[in-house]
Image 1 (cartoon, rainbow, N blue to C red):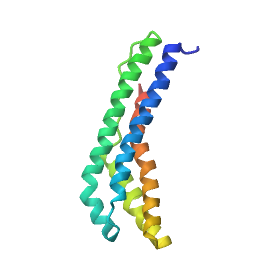
Image 2: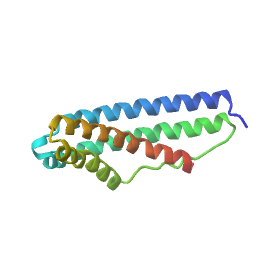
Image 3: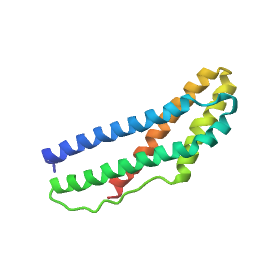
Length: 146
């Protein structure tokens, strides 16, 4: 059964909003990683990690708010009522993902290239993908679970 035009519009708008949200949070994270102290990447990461985690959790919360509203509105447009089941990734998942794509990726790239700027770019690219996945995973799982 095809979706109503309203439901289709809601889905398009929801995807756009999630994209804008993830871009905003990712850009803030990338900005932090550009200032990484290469001389002691592990100490830098430990010092800044609480701020990084807060940014991810805030992004996840905003994604859940968008998701809950989308699920309720989409269901209503199709003549149904739903109670959204909202899911967020575990804090341990955030820590592991940011550590592996942050300082671990930096050190791996440094060992391979020996070029600090190249290692920083490699780390930032890895963090960019990881952060986007962390922010959107809960939204995707919430839609699937609901």
